Amino acid sequence: EIKESGGNWLTGSSYKIAVNFLGSRASEQIILAVANGKDRDALLKQLEKACQRKAWQDAARLQEQKNQRQQQSTRRHVGVDAIIRANERKHAQNAKVADQAFVDNDVDSLMREGAELVAIIKSYVKTLEQSKKKKQQQTTSDDDDNDDTPQELVNMLSHMGMTSALTKHQSSDEQDYYIKLARHVCDFIYPKTIQDAGGMMTLTDVYCLYNRARGTNMISPEDLLKAVEFMPTLQLPTSKRNFQNSGLVVLQESTWSDEQMAERLLELITQSNIHTGLSALDVNRAFKISPLLANEHLQASEQLGFLCRDVTLEGVRFFPNRFCNENELFDIKVQSY
Image (cartoon, rainbow, N blue to C red; front, side, top):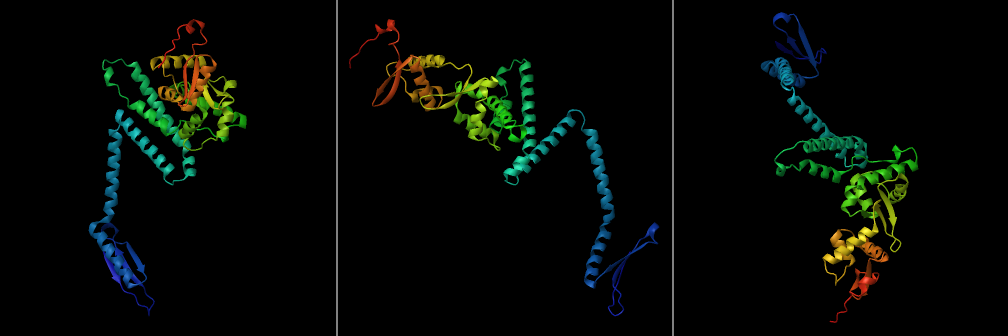
């Protein structure tokens, strides 16, 4: 039961609302004092609405429904279903971390979340590797129905960023940092990246690919130059090489052989047209390497005696060097056009 009473400024009395309880609490009463009649009327209106819909029962009913849902959820999610639910919660947390890392459009915010993002990427890569191993162990008759989704996701993660990003703060001194950086660079390009490039990559390409993979916390060109100097000492499968003619700096496999490259060039000339020879652009298109690096391969093969050059107004072209083999001198036919 709700009763209202008016105030009187002459006697100093205030506007009041008296709430009387019924039933077992009939002896209890709550008195609400308000400053003016307008506030009293607004409060009284809200109290009457709450009494009509019995708002005190809503909280208990909602709490009971919540408890029932939790009990049902606990009973239902067992076994595989429980694992699925746990994975869903894990994915939701990962999405929250990624959103938080990029929400402020701030590099500092991204760097703060970088460690957790790296951990997430590592977990995905590990899961994909385990899935690939299990798939290789299973022998099925449907070899044509191979699912390339895991490999596509691995490639996507490779383009998005590396699984780790070394910083100078993680190293005890400067030399230790460059040694670790040399190992990181080697692990990044070897074996797949550098072998896809033919066994040799320009240091500029390595620098661009490595920094693109790091995303943030990029290294400087000086850091890369100092790091690759430690590769021979560490006996890594890649090493630095300087071409004397152009000053081009590259990273090549330790098993690299200029003789093998010269033989590949001779084979390419034979397959294409021996009468037209090869230019740097021809090697560039055939081996999918930069024209500058292609020109260095041609010059190195020339110095080894496998090729010889022909300089014309149209440019420089390279041909098989038959002058170094006395038995082939008699096979040369002079043709007139």
